[in-house]
Length: 117
Length: 116
Image (cartoon, rainbow over all chains, first blue to last red; front, top):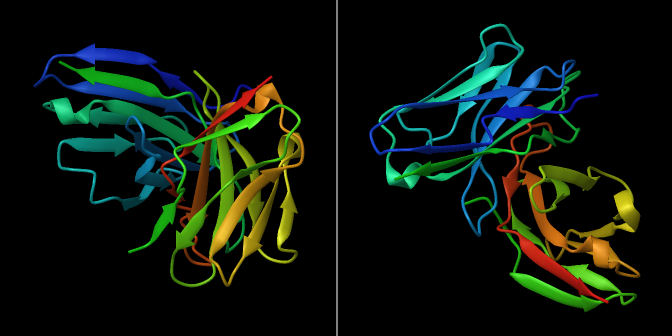
């Protein structure tokens, strides 16, 4: 079990540039989540997928943010025209959803830290 | 608004003493409740959860938590703290029983420091 992996672990970029983060979930997990965490705060939900379908997006996710999970396996989170306020840790998590009710826990990656200068 | 509160930014405990990390929630319906731990340079790790049944739930590394519906609390406890328990602890909820999204709402975290 290789766990949830995220790449890159650290990204430093200049304001206005585009960045993309990748997440590889646990292979048998059908749900994938993106969260954002800033210093001193708990993770904030951004969006989630079930297989390749994006089922929910937070209002935090502005038009500059887009996430995809094209084949229901890995996912990418792209931020266009980055702003200094986008500086944060971007967390990916996955889970296995079976049946009508979700009762299981999320498995998190180590995160991708973004610094926008 | 649905929210989770962890009233203490930091908890300091001597090794061997009992520890409590507090969590209260404000959500509609009957929530699912979770505790996660974050060690330095590591991802969030699941500790335990309350879905239904016995109000006292046991989890990993000797931790347990007590669900109190009347006080809307879910405090994390351990009878005897270890230095290795030092980490950042997050309480989280899924607001609605039967919520198929599984979207967690997290508290702001509590830094636990256990000194020898």
